[in-house]
Length: 306
Image (cartoon, rainbow, N blue to C red; front, side, top):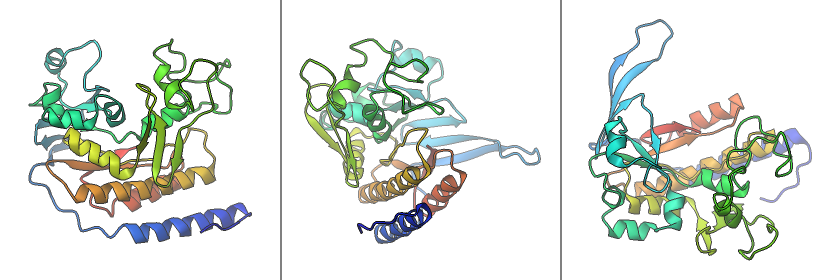
């Protein structure tokens, strides 16, 4: 499929045709069917003309979640500075944990051997959601920098005026971003980035012990099966906020292919888990509409807005 297409419009057309061909080969899915252990109940819908506001209740194997609601992030299975009892008393119903960080340590196998993430962290009567690791790969590749819309990604690290999320944190808080993107863990000047993204997935260096790790659409689902969260997420590709049109379109196409592979892996072993698709497209309305139309045809149990 390696073809030289010089004109921008022809190149975009070629990319769309190639993406459509790959999706056609990869996405023969069964129709979506309701899950007996997971559903969303609509309690009230706005009667105001033109409004789609509604109040609901999400029923999961580990409890209910009132919607709309605030989802608390507990990166490694714990909310910083707050124990579960205090968080639950404050109304925390659904907690979010990061698969990639749990992959690095203690590892999905250790969590599974302990009875799954709910039991491992002592939260057996409340629901959990785990992500795929896509955002962490993006963050590692940029060493925690310039992930917000409006950031000038071309600016050098440390230059005044560059927006950042985590690059201003003191060492060792930044250590995991430096190591994950490094070609070596030796002391000295930061080496060239070594986060590699390909059609197969992404490779990066563990910030804990320096070993190389690989994350694929299939492996992240297997890890989330071992963790056992109520809601799991397929692997997605996240471009920077200032990404040009052609690379953004290719990123959305890759995300769709990765999500198709993740969904196929999930459907082979559903267990008591729901999978949410992730809509992408940056700020491009056409690409976001394409993403909605593509993913809505597949048997996801819900959707996230990426």
